[in-house]
Length: 269
Image (cartoon, rainbow, N blue to C red):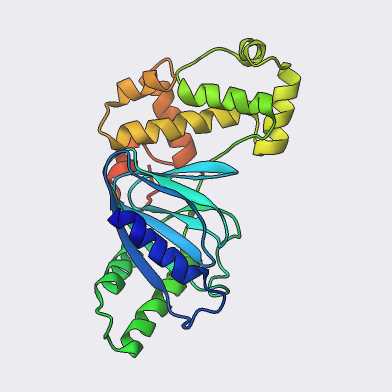
């Protein structure tokens, strides 16, 4: 109940049409395994950062699985919910309308450098009576750092066509399903050509690419829980750990082990 009250209170603040201050707003939320922040939106832009655990952010248009040291950028008025596959510590920064022009007006996953993480924590620790000048200086650095945040390819858009949607939901429940598209098409009563067209036009990627993203999303959750790479590879539909690791490295630039150990996204190998 306390969590719901806290979320609703901040939502009310950020919904005001004319906020009394151009300062940033911050919120700290801890969720237990299976916890969820229900569907809502804000009048302010939002950067949601997982300092511990992994989160899943869901909108009408798709989902994002976000490991530690990454964040989801959520533009104003995008309805979203947040789910916690395991224990999760969230730190959220809200930006007044018009303050951020360096990030896209769509949802995306970005890396969070150590300096931005520490500044966020420092702003959360500042007492309400802290000198206005000090807070403004810290907020200015936060805004500067947003210009350099690298985006990561962790989007899983969902098709709208009912047949393609049924296929997407089927594979989301069974990411280890290795059947080719022609067999899956029979199950959802659609032609291969129709499904390929729907994924390309509505999800913005081929069915093959979409299926890879789905498997990657599930793999990130399993890896964050400490599941061995060999088991993860099998549970998300790869025939061997080497094939899974090759896909992971190709998409994210590093091996699964390096991805979760790095404090800052490192593309060096």
